[in-house]
Image (cartoon, rainbow, N blue to C red):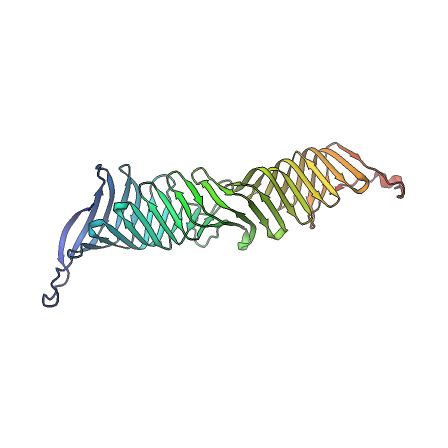
Length: 388
């Protein structure tokens, strides 16, 4: 397939060439250039224009400056393309775009693909970004060694090491802003139309705080999700580490709802922080609120003590803990058992929790060792929180 070439206002050839030293015809310089291509069914395929171009007849080669164009899907503009310069070979069989190359999606997610060099093969509808490729939307940037886009299917393949950066609020293009979350994976297949995304592993993620500090580290086998629907599934086994708190969570496949900045899982899991062990069925981690919610079957253990509840919540910024529903706290000391509808508490430096039951009814059972000194009446009347 060749593109039809429409040139307006030919200014003439380049500087005269001495016929004794060259028999090739000099290139023509065009004031404007338009290349248009249609598909066999008559639908528009692509257009490319330039305010100035040089055409070398013998080589069937066009060198154009500041080229701009459109790629079509279903006869409608789907992508806008621009660069600093272009080389069109064999009347449009191959196009090389260089400089500040931009490929802007016009519909759907409106992803911008950028790079320094793009190799475009129109007959195959294939565009390969060969130097410093990155795909950007308002809050996300994906970088890789190489990226190729299939125009007709909108499949974007990212090759080599792939890095996904996510901003919670600040636009990605804001100068000097640091990403809140960074995920690294291997080859990634992303459909820019449907939003479907698949990444090969291993997957390593980091959530960062002020000063670029790593708050949590995440490990998974691979990624599977949909950017249009707003989620990525971290395919298990999944491991989440909190280095500053000596914390760890082990789980199965976990969903990252990145619009809500939350991790969600409805399967059994186990977690630890220093001397404490936490388990349950299902959790929701709200990153922005720094809160972990155990959805059911909450069980918290440490040497000598154990708490069970229908559900529980921990805020790792305030260190506040709350257990709700059929709460039972067992202590080996004096075989004490405390039951309540709700207990609240706080996490100490060694990971232990001190609980109390504000405004709620509490039932306690304990066994007193007769060999121990009995407390005075004054000591009996003195109330203290339940230590766990």
